[in-house]
Length: 268
Image 1 (cartoon, helix red, strand yellow):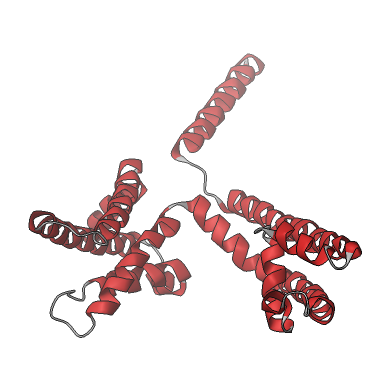
Image 2: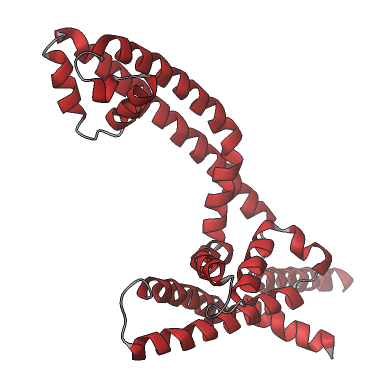
């Protein structure tokens, strides 16, 4: 009995229509959360309440299907995404109204949108790539901080009298440099200092080259390299589909039939 139910749930879990329906419910959940930020009439509020109950029950059903269909239940909660999905579903069961934890329940419902990552494999590859790239990115961030610190100290000493609001101390100077790196009206800051120090354009151009161009390309290169490794690992660990298995069986049958045809004349 249990094995029959498990086999049916495995087929349901692997069904593409069911996967698309799960994605659709996640999108509807995101829209429902966004709708609640507006002032809604009583009818719409009642509708969102019913919709919230449906979404919560469906997510509970979906995580139950995944748990029962998983052949290795002992390690089910050892996977990060399964833990995340289970926590979101469990906390979503907390009633929003008349509860001391109402705020927590509302906040957790926002994280339902992140369930899209656990459902779509390509998004999981992106997140895993970013996480695995963090150790390498740490050295790039450290080097970028050193550059920021040097330029901020220089700017604070030289440009402080020109505009104390932007260059008053090293902390404010670092915020100003971040503004320059993001190209947020950085030319206004440059022209202001160039009116006193005409050579100050060198300061800005070299800083932008080091941060916005060189370091940004380094970060992109590291992330892309890790993503390629993740895609390669996913392809290697991917199990063959039913169509591929059927094609392989057909090829084996054709090969056996060909060998039998060749062996018959020899027996004669």
